[in-house]
Length: 75
Length: 240
Image (cartoon, rainbow over all chains, first blue to last red; front, side, top):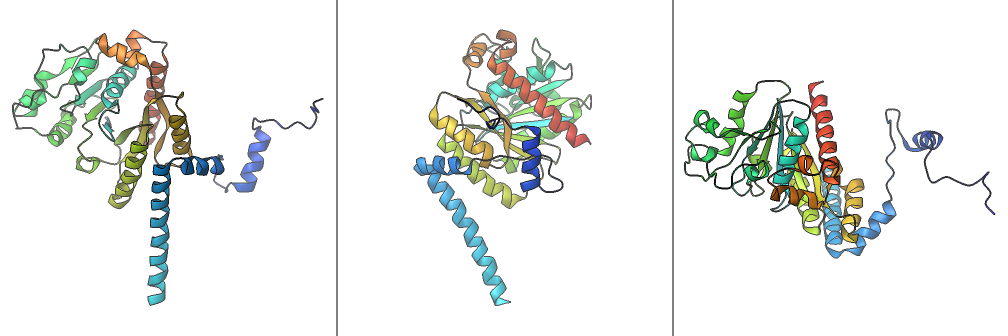
């Protein structure tokens, strides 16, 4: 038997959105973008070409980070 | 004057169909709409009812003033300039884009440029109010091209508004559904709308027409009206 008093809705109410805004949003944020990160990760892993591109773009970013820290060390 | 540039990220993405259908959707607001074919392989005129035998276009004239003879008007009131058969090398696409300023008869005028896929975005004379739509299909090659494009845009510090617009989306395909969902949450510059694959677009072309006239209640026509509305909102933000 369903307990309607505690059943969670799958639809976001205004209350849910305000709660998410308080939790994650900044002062000037007027919307919350919900991203299923786990599903996206699985999609990328599912297709080898997408995986290659994701790896390449991530590596480029990390290389840049390393370069930045290297410059700092030289200073 | 609002300028929209549409270019396929690769050949065959359906850019010319979007230009023709979008032009007619914008014309519903009774504003002047110009569609300029910059693509030698585009055949924009065929989508807008130009006779198949008609070969002349701006590329057959030495200057813009004489090329204006080749402006045609379709039944919806869209004024369009075909590419032609390139019998005269006096004009190039950059000078056509710049010369279109002369036609600017109203602040509400829309200029849609059908750009060839092989000419890079950085070769166009773009300013900060211009909207550049790069058309992508839901496949892995477009995914690859989109990420390559993002790298070049970052390096060039582009000032215009650049968006990726998904065309021919087939929701029955698992791959396409996966890709669209991924793009909508993770691909920067993806437009918040997409054009569904719809047989109506091909059928309308076979009837020398566009979706709005052949199937006004079709999914495709809804998509083009949504696209037109979104562009109006983007362009009005520019004016503020």
